Length: 164
Image (cartoon, rainbow, N blue to C red):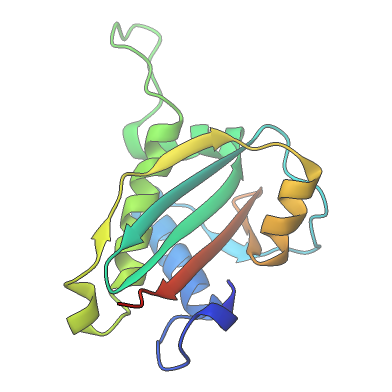
């Protein structure tokens, strides 16, 4: 997270973002978050980026980059694996990540002073395939990467006040 763009009086920092992510993963998807043993210098294979923007007194986004296998595992944990005899359509692997992101962003925004939270609106979670070494280096330089049940998960938050 780029702390330079955020006022020092806000209680949001990398440690709070990591705690919030760990709490949400454990409570919502039964996934444990641990420190990563080594730094990741290349994007995960078949990486996907998920983000949710918010605006109001502050604007920004919570962003995650994860391997596609993690998205599938998370959706299976939330919805249960699709059965062989189940005629219903298979859930989109991104559905679980989008739900996780909704909960994570809400939890993080609750850390803001209550008079500011009431003036912030969250957008809809978005997803795209993540590619490009230069894009990864820029993202990774301002993000934190963790081990989520054997999968690398990289998170950051962009936050800046809206100047009237």
